[in-house]
Image 1 (cartoon, rainbow, N blue to C red):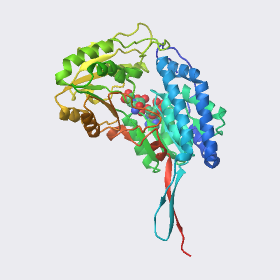
Image 2 (tube, protein in one colour; image 1 turned 120 degrees about the horizontal axis):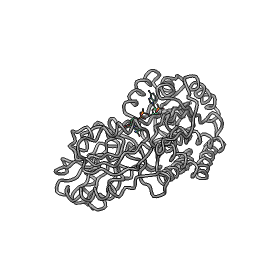
Image 3 (cartoon, rainbow, N blue to C red; image 1 turned 30 degrees about the vertical axis):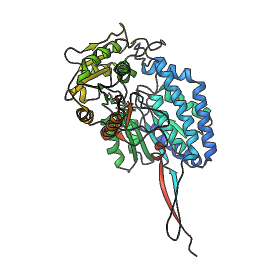
Image 4 (spheres, rainbow, N blue to C red; image 1 turned 90 degrees about the vertical axis):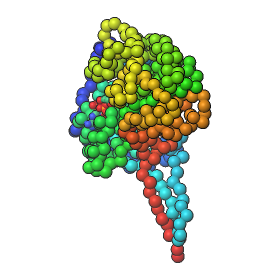
Length: 446
Ligand code: NDP
């Protein structure tokens, strides 16, 4: 593992292959019968203890995440706070995920929420610990056991989390981590007959392979994939506020965020004024050493990824920021003027490059926002609340914010439309993806 800000090695780990992956699945399979029998109150207590341990080790986890991903430390601290909140939430969810009774003739009909068994969670490198918790929390709350496969580039926080789970008293075998390449360990999990479900976050391309592979054993699949989200700014918005926040909606985590609002759509009549404000705000993004408290943007994850990101900047951009000299996979904040047909507006850049696109009116804004294969998140800036609701209903996207860019909370559903995937994480909705609905009819006839 390498620190992306220094290019220095920070750890060396053995690579898991098929054999180690099978062993992890076997441990999870063996642990399942007794884990599902743990009483709801006790399962809740164990998850609560894990949440508390995450809080107690918050600084350590944030330092690991910052060094492994190159994230600014302040952002990493915020993310660890969310991880604890997610486990607290699912500790409370264990005994609030009910079945129902349905009126039928001749008896009583009731439904149960049954765990699936062994669940595999395949997570990416951009928010390793956060995304792990979004999958582990509901999976464990529902009574499943888990094999977690972090991205090869960023496994360190997942390994530490598994240690904390044991320390919390979650029995051995319930949480297993496999550190191996996606093409080997990930692929084996997708095909393994004892894995009941794949919870995947990553690229749309690999998501497609997950679906294909899972078909062999009819595995349950939830997919949280790429995005090309629109930040729609109407002329009647508070332009100062909209412009001040727009850079952070795309350059946070150096743009390596599936929710990045990387298409900034601006109503023509406010375009010039907004651009001035946007450039000024982008100049204010503090890029540099992730270990410093004031840093807002760090480097990209790897040299190869920097090359991909750089390939999206053609010609003279509207604005190009500065980056530190010396080692590190740095890429500046870049604003480019684009049409929605340009590559920078069609493909997920996953880096600090935003396309600014003018639109004529509300209908045009909706048309452009929806003219993408993706549908994950997005923002709408306007002072007209009726318009905000009209546009929010019309945009084909799973997570929208009005006069805000916030997408993710432990308590609310998160996931995509179209090629951004399906299934929902977080909130009580995630529990549906980690349980099977069973219907039981009991005759009351003599
Ligand atoms: P991937 O989709 O390749 O990786 C995500 C996870 O899937 C990682 O754990 C990876 O393992 C694993 N994986 C890779 N190939 C397979 C496979 N054949 N079977 C099972 N698991 C597999 O994303 P990348 O890391 O390569 O990023 C590429 C692009 O994907 C980014 O530039 C971005 O556009 C998008 N992306 C979107 C994310 C999101 O949050 N929606 C997150 C990450 C990327 P390993 O890395 O160990 O090989």
